[in-house]
Length: 130
Length: 130
DNA sequence: TCTCAGTTTAGAATGATTCTAAAGTGTTGA
DNA sequence: TCAACACTTTAGAATCATTCTAAACTGAGA
Ligand SMILES: [Mn+2]
Ligand SMILES: [Mn+2]
Ligand SMILES: [Zn+2]
Ligand SMILES: [Zn+2]
Image: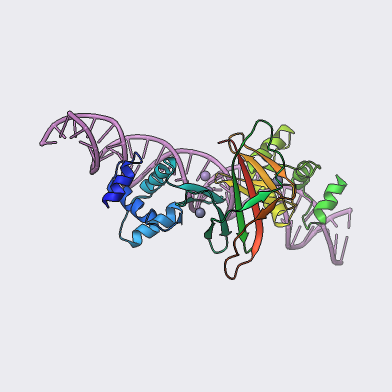
């Protein structure tokens, strides 16, 4: 718990009760993909009731500080990813799950980048089912 | 215009005034990426005022009939793509534009597909800027 | 302990999208 | 030709994830 406080402090985030609970859950060593809603539900199961506003605030604070990645897979909810390494995903819309692809995927055959633009990131989403 | 009517009929879509206008714009031979809002704006420029409800209905009707693809790039709006071939995109969030990548991109190094799942589609998004 | 900037939160607002239900229109069989 | 009806369009209300507001709260430093 003091590690969590230090962790938050070292990221310019005041270690409040709520942030400690959320960070404790998110950064427990297991990579996770959460939405504001799913995070709220998980914390509630653990008897930690935190307002949705704070959950949104915190996810964004963590995101702004590079502790989370943001994933857009469907237009009706945003996923946050605790795995901040460059990686890709298997995604099942039907079963609503995401699996990291950490292997070194190679994307070849790209045409030249549009004029005056540079590539920021290549995202590969492997859609499962239909 | 009669080609458009035939085109709609052949896709089980009754050729109404609105659908004819929308199809005429969307399927003019140039590939397009539109949102309900951008489509509404373009049609308005051409003096075709169609209610947003109908624009949404029509985009979905076309989508359901395989005339359009749906793209999720950001959580706050949905893009429809008139290019229904398998292809990928360059995407600039900043400048809000999409460019098709029709070349045969190869994605190699994928780990094995999750148990009991099969790959539906591999989507590659090349994010520009930052 | 005092003070204040940084946080949390309830509740309102936002905005893209969907829904409702009433009016309008293509299609078709007679 | 045209009545009849299923399919469409549409204004306006509803939905819902997310953001905003403003007031109460709290961590950190002195
Ligand atoms: Mn929205
Ligand atoms: Mn929404
Ligand atoms: Zn991930
Ligand atoms: Zn495209």
